[in-house]
Length: 319
Image 1: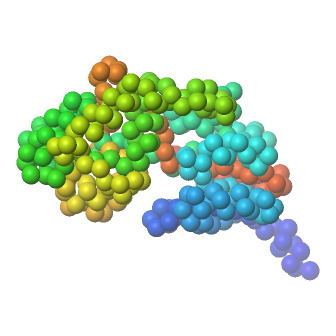
Image 2 (image 1 turned 60 degrees about the vertical axis):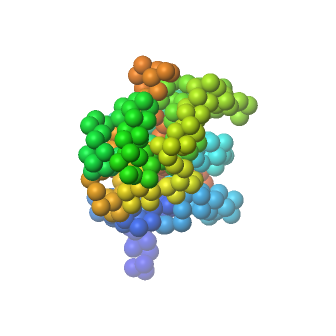
């Protein structure tokens, strides 16, 4: 009979599927353990499901089989997919309200919150690991090439690249995740529309507006710079990382999330700064666009379990 009383007092399990391997996976496990240690009613169970794409497709398949987790980490690229899955997701703001958990969206950066809200202002998923594109630079290469100040504009990037190439470096700069860095983020940085319908957030009948003079001009300028190796293309996604970390290129535009890899691989002093401003388009930057991932809550579980989800979300929001 002892097992009955044990079952009644056992912690309610909350399944959290995520895409964080390596050091980040260890961090996720520690966050879960730390939360579990703060109380005894709920137990967060983190499960690594592979990369971002694999994690999202696993969760979708599990939902169809009625074996879905409570929480799934989804990368920014999957936001539209999740927004469209109305029958499968429970907006995180609703989860918090239902559980009576106090929740202040003002604790988060507005650029982060606004990206994961409906046009009506309801927060759909909980920001968790946010990144954004930056300009990484090799300080030692700058010193050697006589680049005395960190580039703030595209004119500065071109001038610095010329000095780097003249000093014997293979290239001035390269970049990765091209459509994200050089179309999406270039556009928002300069307050240039990407698409109609609030950049696609307000409806699936949105149309892309990226084939405009500003985007064409900057990509044309970069193509021209490639003739003198001021710019060298290094592949898709993060494939060009090694060109920066092995010292071939003095600058690299890509996600702030590469900090860990650069710190591990680079044998030189490096730093990061904001994306360069195209002064022909804007006098000051607006904001960049988010990357990384958020935590989505899936429907189909008991109210008591969602209370545990809400408590965990409160914990994640704490300092």
